[in-house]
Length: 166
Image (spheres, rainbow, N blue to C red):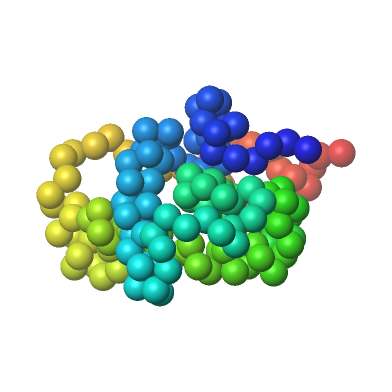
C-alpha cells in the first residue's frame, strides 16, 4: 500500500502540491500556526500539550495530522476511502476530520489568513493586494442559437455539433 504521510510525500513536490494544494514551504508555514493552536487546545482540554498517547496509526505526528486534513480538503474523498488510505477506521477518520478542522480554522485566523466571508471584507483585502495577472478557466456551454444566419455566425464556436458526430 502507498505510504500516505508527510515524510513520504514531501520529497515529491508535484505530488505534494496535488495532494494538499500547498507547496512544502507553504505547508511548513501553516504547520507552525497549526501546531501552536493544537497545543493550546490540548492545554485548554486539560491535557499535556505534546502528549501522543492514544494517537494511533498514521496520524501520530502533527505533520501527518495536518497532511491528512489538507489531503481531505483538497481531494474530498469519501471518508471510507481516506480512512483506508491512512490506515484508520471510517469512524476515526470522521473524528479526526472534525477535530482537526476546528484547529485549522483557528490556526488560519491566528496567522491572519482567515477566509473573507463578507463582500466588504473581500474588497478591503483586494485593495491591499498588488495587481496580478488573472486567468479565468471557462467552459463552453451550449446555448440556443439565433434563427438569423448572420447572428448564428457570431455565436459559432468552430466546434462540430455533438449531434452530427457518429
